[in-house]
Image (cartoon, rainbow, N blue to C red; front, side):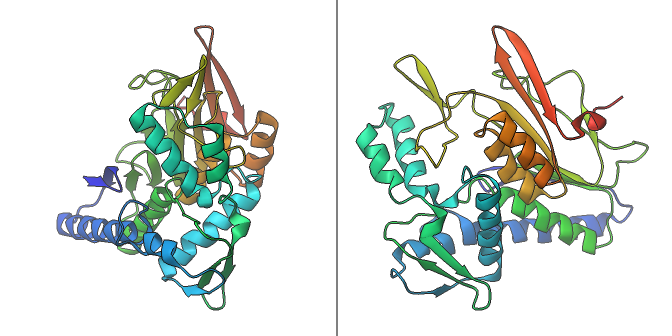
Length: 305
């Protein structure tokens, strides 16, 4: 089923078919409600409406949106500023550039970047409010909302008594228990710059979240250099080194934003960040026709034997 702009799939193993159908229906309703809150495309969404907020005036938001905002704040602080939901102005600029196939000027990038910095917003946990400290702030939760939705759906499924399930929010997955007669859930890992191809060896996961990030097929060529669709909020430009990143984390929210951050940061910072987030990271890069692999944490333990 198509949700949040991507295929959204749920697999549950239970002897109670009616319960599974009921939980699936409730899950998709939950995803729809999250989408209506945090979409940056839908002008009627709660997130979109924040664009008209008065500077310096606290705005009370829903519990779901505030949870996402707080998770995004943690992501910003932990990722050396590479993951930043205030990236909206840059996202819109590069989205338009890819559509028109006209590379944005340095001036346009600098103008958009002037409104990008998480420090331009304030969050108050007691009042559950957000305050904008600068005009033209546009929030983009594209790098965290799917993971958050997957976590919420997984929690709903677990509360129903179903213990063996997979939730796939457009590639951001969380798995619980195991499929029947299996040791875990088999998850494929993409080969760099090959849209459909997977590495021969699969991951075998249970009670973990996994997310991937890569931009080999969404880039712009300018003066002989490829700029990917993943934008470094600190520079305003798309990344120019292209990786396939796979992250295994305790929850899908973390896995989602961490996969983006690990697509941007130098490898020494990826190593530190993975440890800090209690996650494992696997990166593949195609160099001179050969696949270079590097992993951080205990990622090798997840490969199927």
